[in-house]
Amino acid sequence: MEKWERRLINTKRGIFEVFSKGEGDPLCVTHNYSEFNDTGDYFANSFTKLFKVYLINLRETGNSEKAHFPYELSMLETIFDLEEIRKTLGYSSWNFAGHSTGGMLGIVYGIYFSNSLNHNIIVGAAARDYATFSKNCIYNRTHPQYNNMQELIEKLKGTALSKEEREALSIERTKLSLHKPERYHDYFNLPISKKMSAIRLNYFNSEYQIYDVTKKLALISCSTLIICGKHDVQCPIEYSEEMAEGINNSKLVILKESNHYPFLEEKELFLKEVKQFTKKRLSKFTLWSGK
Image (cartoon, rainbow, N blue to C red; front, side, top):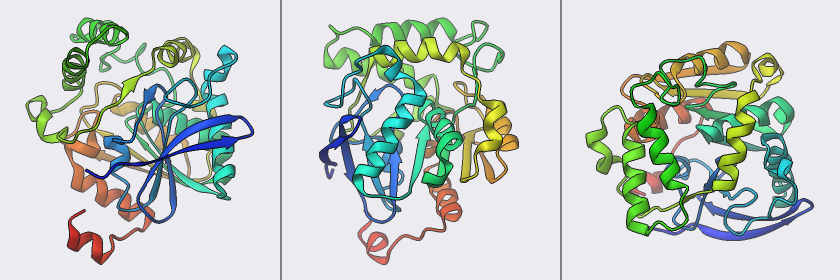
């Protein structure tokens, strides 16, 4: 598998580790507490046939800038960082795609910097606390798999885990969010590895308690594609419907055979929807080469 190209971007807000792959218009991809490397990311891979994808390690992940103050780990401060990365790369505007808490970053990005975004692709996300009031969410205490999920998350925070132990725990955690968990190895079949940043996850868990930007959704003016699996147990479908209702220039796509990973569970349909929305077409070479 072709590795992602690694760069260190020196911005006014510090140095950030960025991985790139693909050709075409620029697309920023990141996640609130994932730590990436040159093996890439399954979600980011979904876009490399259509865009030049920039996969970004946020503060306290990989070789990116540290947080000098706790507030620098907040979603809004993270968007300020992304804006400086965009400017340093030389783009007057770019596209954004985020999955799960990456999609939450995308919503905040659209609220404050819609002029910087050509297209904003939000997958399996929400504009507010998605656990407290939804019994359909696996992070809600009444959900039958709540305790199982919490136990796996706490174990994954451990720093003494072997590679094999971490992988086994990650697989079990991911299976809880698949419509057909028995197909895990069909979906996740590439040598991609990434870590979870405990410091960023812990900050997110505190910020999340007061996270609600639903009343600001109308401020998003950029073209926004919202995709959600019908069976999503992390960010249930009602939150994608709420975002689509609140964002004027938006399109909602519900994939009926997916849970939290529609870009893998219904890969071809997902790509088709993204292409149609962004009016992209695969090159003849890409089709012929099968890459």
